Amino acid sequence: MISMPPSDNDLHAFVDRQLSEADQRLMENYLANHPEVAARVQAWQQDAQHLRAALNAGLQHAPNPDLDPTAIRQRLKHRFHRHLASAAVLVLAVSVGGLSGWKAREMTLVSAMLPMSDALQAYRLFAQQGILPADYQGGDESTMQGWLDRYFTRADRLPDLSAAGFKPVSGRLLSTEQGAAAMVVYQDPSGQKISFYVRPPGPKNFLLPRGSRRDGELQAEYWSGPGYNYAMVIPSDTPAAQKLKQTLNF
Image (cartoon, rainbow, N blue to C red; front, top):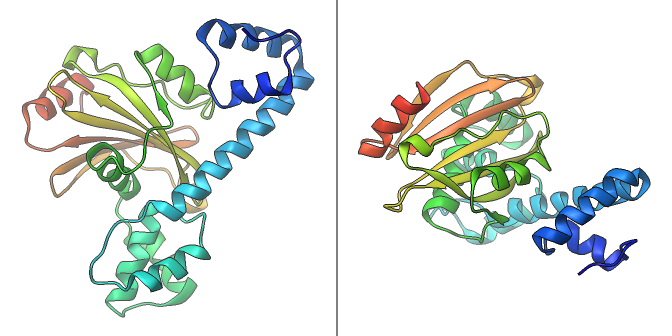
């Protein structure tokens, strides 16, 4: 049980999501009535988010057996805040010898990267391979929505996929050059997984028209809303995929 007024240890436990549900509600009520403490806690939460994003950018690169691991590590050391999709596309550009340097990177990001490639990459790394543990694991849509609202207060609501048998089970914060992104993983009773991905728009506030594309075994359905780009990543050619498309009206 936390003390009132809360100590710094209590506040840090709140930031780290280590409190019980009762203490969580008690702390939220306290912060709502003490804006100066709430501002300090929010700054801690932002620091934790930035640290998590920096670590993700250094750890979550797609494996490529054609490249020298030493060269990859050297590039990552100087580019902590590069998100996974831009890193993968830049590595591809270097490997074919067609482009180089920052000019290559900018041209690749603006004109060569397919829509929501980072959403597909995140699905493969975390939903399929499970490289790192989730930042948050929730039991239902409301608790997962609460977690997402801490970082994306103006984003679209999480899709309700219960009619297709899916419920949100975990969430992960990620990093893009435009700011923080997040992926929420849904799962059905058979273990099939899909993901909902939200990120800031691309360079020059580039918003996406509603669209769809297939990448190997995955299907990405993407769109934009005020201030954010979104994607649902679904395994292609499965009964679950067909049911989801009907549920979501894609």
